[in-house]
Length: 205
Figure 1 (spheres, one colour):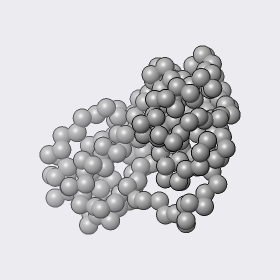
Figure 2 (cartoon, rainbow, N blue to C red; figure 1 turned 30 degrees about the vertical axis):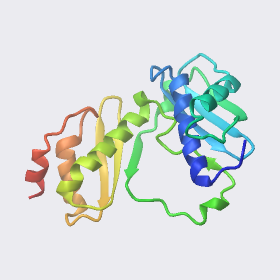
Figure 3 (cartoon, rainbow, N blue to C red; figure 1 turned 45 degrees about the vertical axis):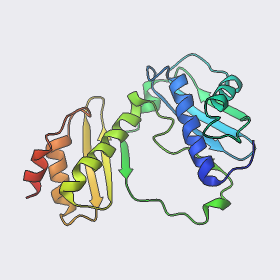
Figure 4 (cartoon, helix red, strand yellow; figure 1 turned 180 degrees about the vertical axis):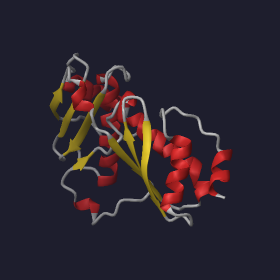
């Protein structure tokens, strides 16, 4: 595989992780989590899935390269090592706490990176942690005008049916305790809860 800039490699492993996850999970029917690590000469695919259908990495890799040829015109092939566990049990998917942050990660000359790994939530099926992550992202976008922050870090705890926000950090004028109380009043419960945004303004006054 031709050597690429780290920024391009990062996008590539993220895209490949999502592509693989959609196929392996059969479009989010089976809980699946995996990561893709680019070590320049090949990519390592590691993960877990409840699906019992074993994929062919070489076939999928060539299909992926064909599907992204416009986005990555210099990508001709991908060599892979497959370390995926199939027919996994629910205990392999018991991650209970996830976080979302709008802060940019600090890097020290990232072009020196020897390997590049796909980042969460890429490679995670929608019926697993990706849905909750996207819900945190949505909460961040909807609350920003009311909470008046330029950055925020949200953490939530998940159960089989509920979604509980456990912490918030930000540069808001309001205290974290105040904002957490507002969020818990409006968002704790099923992760598909629809927020009445007018309540946010009333809660922070």
